[in-house]
Every structure is written in structure tokens, then in C-alpha cells.
Image (cartoon, rainbow, N blue to C red; front, side):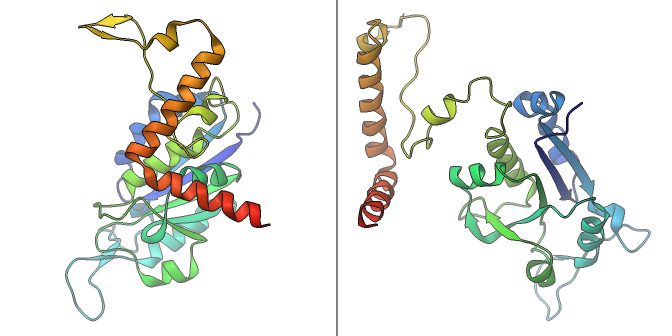
Length: 238
């Protein structure tokens, strides 16, 4: 069996939160076909005491508990290969389609799922290569964001999707939202499929879809159009 194109290690206090989703759907098939190797590590296995304690009160006082550096350090050093270490953190740059594409080109990713009030600052300073945020809101821990990241990243691994051309036409594939999709029946409760899509004329269909992508992006995500204009302006100045 050939070596997987991407290896992913996930460090977490709650393995079951990630094990079940990663055993379903597209990720399951990618793992079965050997395109991706995902290993889940329980940080409690590296705890310093028999109670498997991985958190403690913050120095200086304050609410909540802080994830200790030692279990994370020991777990990281038990993994063969260095890997690109990512801490799921509100400090990080917000994850995007471009981030997913960039990370999919790496051979080995390591995700560290924080919890409670966060992780010891020494993890931020000495043990990670990058910090990524899921958005400007707070969740209980890094497990669910990591699932989102992994799902998005794996889509860019060669051989995972049946038709890689779909990556370009999907939302954010070229900076715009995706065009509307329809399937059978042609008419449902008086709601009909646009005539352009059933015309059989490929050029007409393509023109309709491009116009719809632009219209939907302008309506729902005008910020994407602004970003495209800035990028185009920057390119033209070079």
C-alpha cells in the first residue's frame, strides 16, 4: 500500500468528539483509500498523575482552568516526525479556503485542540508553528473547529474528490459564491427550474451560472467582491 499523501495527528482531551465524525462520509473514504492517515491522541495518556490531570488553576488567579504544557509537550514528542503544528486558537488568523489549500500541500499536520480557558502560554511560544481561528466567536474547545479544518483541507488532497474540477466551481473556488443548483423534478409545487439550465446549450448554461455567481456574491457576500478588486488592483500595479 502506498504512503498516504497527508498525515494528520490530532491532540485532544476528548477523542470521541473527533473519532466518530472522522469515521464517516468523505473523510472515511479518504482514509480507506489510503489518501489520508489520521491519528487521534488522548492528552490524558500523557498526564503526570494517576488522575490523568491535564489542567490546573491559572497563576495570578482568575476563573476557569488552563491546559498544562507538559501533556502537550510529551504527546508531541511521542509522535514520529515533526509535522506542522497548529494550535486552534482565537489569536490565529481566521481559517479560509486559501488556508485549506495551503495546508493540503503539506505532508504532515498536527492539530492541538485547546480547552477550558486556553493553554499555557509556553505552548503558544515554543511548541507550535501556526495558530488558526475558526472565527470571531468562542466555542468550548478546539475539537469542532479542527473537524471543520480537516474536512476542508482533505478536499484538496489529490484522489479524495471524484472530480477535482468541482473545487473550482464551488463557493470560494475562484473568490465567488457558487451558482444555484437544481435537480429533479423540473417543477415542484409550482417552482420551476430556470429555462437556461434545461436549454441544452452549454454556453447559455455557463453564462447563466457565471451571472448567478456574481449576483449572489454581490447580494450575500459583497466583501468578497471588494477583496477580488483589491487583489486585481494589486496585480495590475506589479
